[in-house]
Image (cartoon, one colour):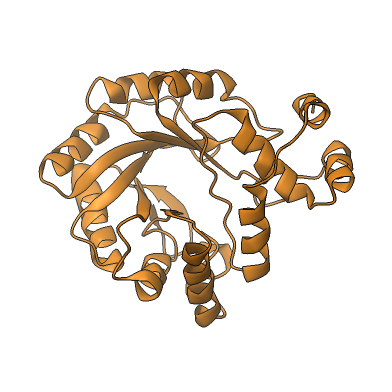
Length: 261
């Protein structure tokens, strides 16, 4: 999401730097790339293709459909059957793939899950999977009821929702998905468009000699065994900080302080 231009629109200021971030991420062992053709639109997927195609076998590229960008840079639901099919083909074209590893249906609701039925959209994705254009199906911006509705139609491999240290509405859902072996992927893991600001977070980070955002990522990774993190960045320095967070272990006192936030 950070590899396109400002407000996730248009090309980045430095395309070569965006390519370098992707290539360095793969060299550092990252093998899960989260994207969408509505980032840019099209720009991020085209940069991914430039940087990484032909893709290594161990890389999983996860994309999202269900929204479109308006000419005014707005985000508009786009869940009609023809729109979903067109979105899949657009992602395939711009990524240079014959089949998409995982496609998340991004359900309506700009401020979180609105609880509306997603059955019709999942029927379309199930057909696209049967056609061999999609290998696995996931969900984004959904509640537990919508997850159950989707699972009655097809298998679900991941759920991608807003969740972090101070936005914990999905606690019960995360635990339920963990029992089922379904990945939970928190977006805005570092707070949102405004990074997390917390005295507690700063104190834990200072005691460990690391950055507050590294603590926030480490907490997510210790929160549950099914959590995958997708911290966006366009900076090589931040990329290295984010990757280093994967090797951190928060002790009991740090976890207690953070859990109490």
